Length: 94
Image (cartoon, rainbow, N blue to C red; front, side, top):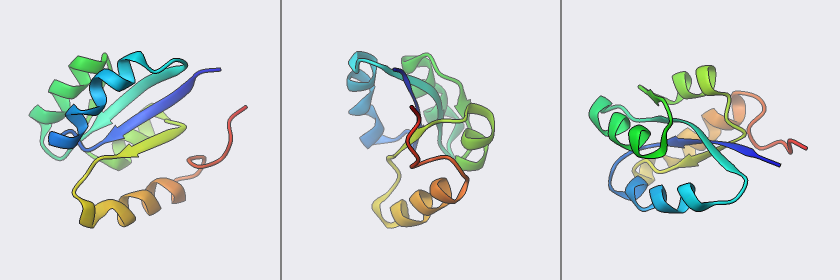
């Protein structure tokens, strides 16, 4: 089983996820997003995934089953809620 992962936030914290996501069995990073295009491009390139300019684009274009929220902590709740409200995030995909 493969799980499609989206990474929201491509700053300092996201850099810690790169190696982990490369080695995680059954994981496929389908997209990354950040408000700063250069950060998204760098992390996207490192993970072999397209870079998007925000959560709506990530969800619309890449259809992740799971979103890692690596944005500033004060934004976590809003970003997690937006991902959940977008539809399938948080539901089991078997």
